[in-house]
Image 1: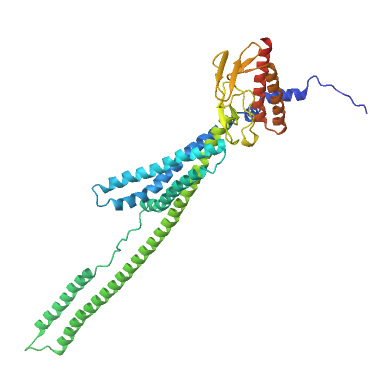
Image 2: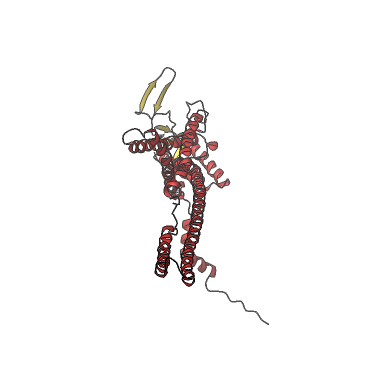
Length: 412
C-alpha cells in the first residue's frame, strides 16, 4: 500500500488564529486581560462602597431615631410643643454622630495608609469607637421600637354572645299565655266555686304546660350563659396567645434589626477604608513617594504629584525608596540662572548651562541621567521577576522618560 503526502495550500492554524482575533470572544478577552490602572479596575467597587457608607448612615439614623425620640419626648413632655423639640434634638444628635464618624474615620485610615499607624492615633481610635458605640446603642434599642411602630398588636374583639334577655322575653310571653289559658279555663269551669274532677284534670294540664315552659326557659338561659362563658374564655385565651405570638415576633424581628445595626456599622468602616485605600492606591500610581530628608522618622511619607506620566516604583510602604531625580518636599526650584542663597549653616550655588537638563527645579548632567536609567532598568527587571506587572509597566514609563531626556541632553 502506498501512502501519498498532500501539502496544504494554506496554514490552517493561521486561518484559525485570524478567525479568533476577529471574533467577539477575542475582543472580550482582550478587554478583560488588558492592563488597567487601579482606579479603572475598582471604579465600580468605589461607588458601591460610597453608596453603602451613606446607606449605613441612613439606616443607623432611622433605627436610632425612634429610641432617641421616645427618650427626649419624655424629657420635653412638660414643655410647649414637646414633639417638635424631641424631633429637633433627635435629628441634631444623630446627624452629628454620623457626620463626625464620616469626618474622623477617613482621616484615621488616610493617615494610617500614608504614614503608618502611630500611637498618637489611639486617641482618634478611641473617639471613633465612642461615636460608634453611641450609634450602635441607639440603633440597637431603636430596632425593637421600629418593629413595634411598624406593626400593630392584635386587638381584642368581643365575641358574639347569645342574648339572655331575648330568651327570657320570648319565654315570658309564652308563659304568660299559658298562665292566661289556665286562669281563663278555671274561671269558665267554676261552678259554685269548685271544678269538677274532669275540669280539674284539664286545669292541671294547663298549669303543667306553664311550668314546663318555665323550666325550659331556665334551662335555655343556663345553657346560653354557659355557652357565653365558654365563648368569652376562648376569645380571651386566643387573644393572649396572639399577644404572646406578637411579642415573640417583635423580639425576633427587632433583635434581627438590632443585630443588623452592628453589621451596618462594620460595613460602614469597611466602605470608608476601601474608599481611602482607593484614593491612596490611585495617588501612589501617579505620584512619587519619598522619605523627606529633613524628617527624623523614616515612616513619614510625602506624596507629590508630578507633571509627567512616570509612576513611582511601588505603592507599598515596605518597598519605598527615594525616587531619583524627583524633588522632595523640602527642595525649592531655582529662581534664576545664577542665584546664591545664604543661610546660617549652608550656602548653595545653582548653575545652569547647556550640558544639563532641568527637572522639577533642579539641573542634571548626562552622568546623572545615565545613573537614573541604569537604576530604573534594574527596578523594571526586579518587578517583572516578582510578577508585579502593573508596577513594571509604571517603572517602564519612568525609564522611557529618562531615556527621552538623555536624547534631549545629547542633542544640546
